[in-house]
Image (cartoon, one colour):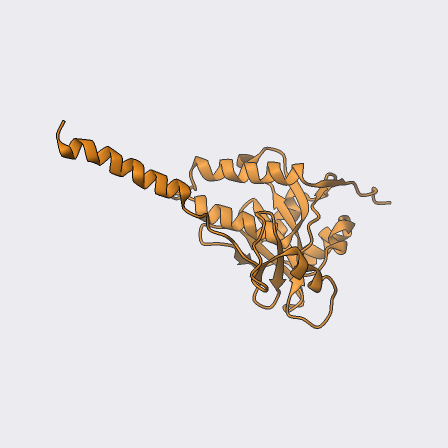
Length: 217
C-alpha cells in the first residue's frame, strides 16, 4: 500500500470528525437574540404577512391587541370534526386545488384565501358571499382570531383520505406552503411531497383538540 492509499482514508475520517463536532446552527429570537427551542413561538406582521421567530419572554409582550405592528400567533389547533362543506360550496369558493387556508386579514378588511403551490402560497379570488354562507353553517369560523388563525382545509385524497378541517395557527398554515415548496418535484409533485403532506396533517391531528358544533336548528 503506497502513501496515498494510507493517507486518503485518514483525511476522509478527519473531515467526518470535523463535521460531527461542528457547532449546530442556532436559531435566535428576532428581538432579543436569545437562543430558541425548535418548537418556538411566532409573531406575525399582518401588513406584510411576515412571520417573526421569538422566544417565550418576547412573545408575552405581544399577547394583547395594543398599538403594535405585530400579533402573537396562538398555539391552539382545533379539529373540526363535524365541519359542513358541500362539494358545491367548495367549488363556489373558487379554489383550484384541494388544499387551502382562509383567514381574516385586518389590513385587507376581508377574508383571504390562499392555496399552497410549488412557488409558495398563492392567493385565490374568493366569493365572499359563499364564505359568509360557510361561516353561517360553521360558527367556529366566526370565532377565529383575525390575522393569526385560519381555516386549514385538506380535501385531497392523496394526502390522507377523508377531508380534514382545522382552525390552525397561521404559522402552521404557512408551514404547509413551505413544505410543499421544498418537496415538490416535476409537474405532479412526486410521491415524496404527498407523503410529507400526509405526515403534516397526521401530526396536526395528533396535536389538535376536537371540536363538535351543535346541529343547526
